[in-house]
Length: 134
Image 1 (cartoon, rainbow, N blue to C red):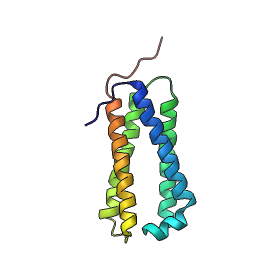
Image 2: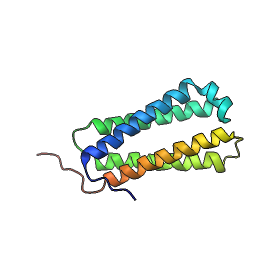
Image 3: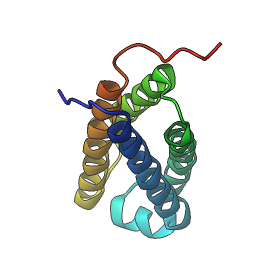
Image 4: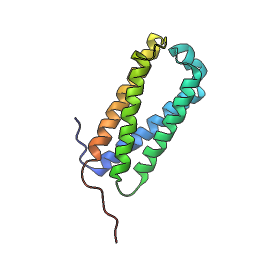
């Protein structure tokens, strides 16, 4: 769907994933009481999501900071992001949770952003894995 032709573009995508993940982690972790009342998502689920997103954001930052591209690591991150999109869809349409309209919009918007990031990561991870110097 997308074409990511350079390592620097992929690195920017990874840093964007790390930064947006950190922002989401902070909002869900520190603002869970407020977000619960606005979205209808239980605070414990928001806090769990914050921990999962922190792990993914940490991986994205680690991959972005590496001097060489790790195809397998970027692919794993992209697959995790695709799983996050599926979890978002389940939360809105399959969980039976009474989300507010704002909550539904919040989760769908997050899912769409993560879908774009995952697609860009997958596209940027194409090609052979770099070989270590001997």
